Image 1 (spheres, protein in one colour):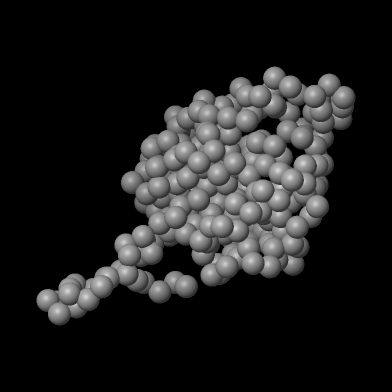
Image 2: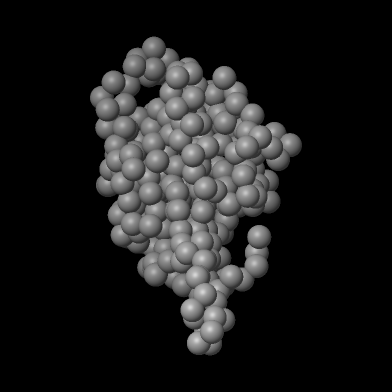
Length: 257
Ligand SMILES: [Zn+2]
């Protein structure tokens, strides 16, 4: 899996042989940032510049800053985009801290605009939902019992991401709407490196096996599963739990209906 497939210099004979298509050769771009309790994962996509996916907590922001400097020899000024896979508090709490050290715009699914206008869940349980997001420790937020507080969270966002479009400034990364865990959930997929960043759409906290998160809308979840299974994936990066490096990581996925 970690073999270095980069080509050796070609001699005239090997140059005449058919080459493996270039897209299969690109090295992976994603780095994982997590605290030792692995509450929620933050990811860095490193190309010419850097994307932060799900800043998580303030602790994760401090960790990613150190990682940028010490491992990648970059600085926070190198970050040109912040992406939120969905708006649960355990993935977004670090946004303010991150914006203090970089000026990158924050992007999330365009579905959030609609959800903020029709924030029906909060009309029913306004206080419970708000308090839960403010007060539950990260470990309990893994339960993700509540819809995000869209009317508050919408203010964090500068750029809106549409299904199937390329990521701003990083067109090799495709946005995939993946409603299920929450209506605005999205994944980021790079067909050239076969990497999938999947937020809480798929997690691996249950003994390491991939689990597709539940949804009130079963048809929507089935469609999300169908889309994800149609992708060639070698590296799966979940919002919680360990990344999976495998030829077919979604072949044996459990589905929480
Ligand atoms: Zn979540």
